[in-house]
Image 1 (cartoon, protein in one colour):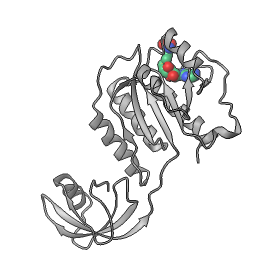
Image 2: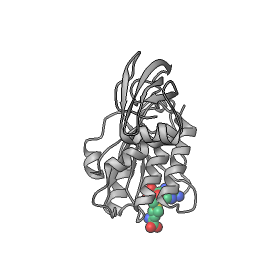
Image 3: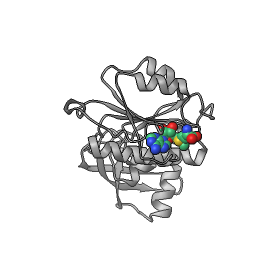
Image 4: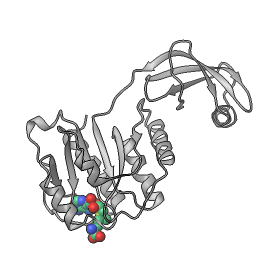
Length: 233
Ligand code: SAM
């Protein structure tokens, strides 16, 4: 179960109404029942129910069962598309171990805004489902050109470009330990101007995901898999 409070030996964790409903109503836990907790910072903790009520309750941390496991330093940049597909992309990026998820606005991105809180909740659920101890941060929507203007010096960029048929991810030996980012475009793809800028960046690795044009959500999973295969743990 994901909680926001700090976790540590003997720490008590008050439950929200929804958490109490889930633990006592759905999971049928009672006082002395045990549950694994994580908050994205302190690893996983075994906790015991010390108070159980309809509208709340309290857990007490017993022992740490997993240390915090940080994912590789991978940013996942994507242009938001329709709501359900954007949810899917965030969920899959979190499951596949992205450390930060950054929705970006490109020239052909249709959405002007996103529900950051909703996407962050999807990232939490994905981390819960894979038994992870880390939750990637989902950033608010920002313009791709501005993000590129302030790009961190050492971070490599895997630019997924459907026009680049046949270009695999070719890596020099020193690129493995570096911070990375993956970029997937919107349904309409990138503009010629964006494409020209992206292919000319010194830190960009232009990559094809095969001879067919994939939908953005499929491309997201394919790109994460390719990156993982070449550079992940
Ligand atoms: N420009 C396209 C069009 O309308 O014909 C489609 C863009 S595609 C649906 C969305 C994004 O997925 C692309 O911007 C790219 O980042 C990625 N993508 C899809 N297929 C790809 C491929 N075969 N190789 C590399 N990237 C791909």
